[in-house]
Length: 107
Image 1 (cartoon, one colour):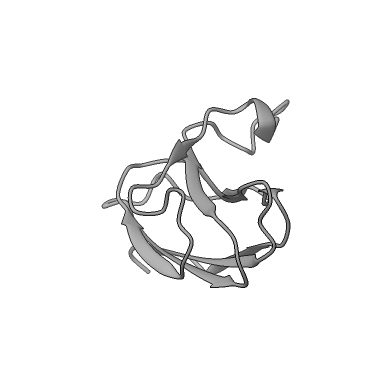
Image 2 (cartoon, rainbow, N blue to C red):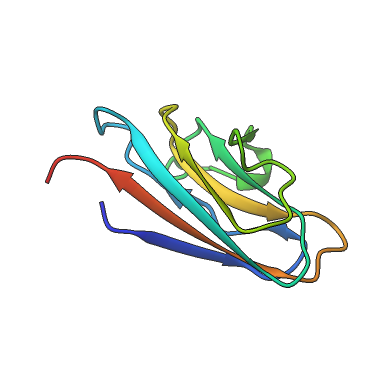
């Protein structure tokens, strides 16, 4: 899978990025780079953003371990099979988070 880069500039959630839940083993590297001052959480969902009628705000989101309420550049691994990833900046945040998503798999 190609690298995915998503950026969130203001309080709220980024665009939803779909990942391949068919990859076995399921491994995603996440690197979040913070510029400025912000508190952010990287989240994953089991709901498929490609489904008809999908609405991100109605999906159930779970925080990635190690990337919840973070205020510094950091990285983590996600090994729980999921279908979507996003980053959410807390209210009052004035920084920017750039999230790099790299899913491992066979080529």
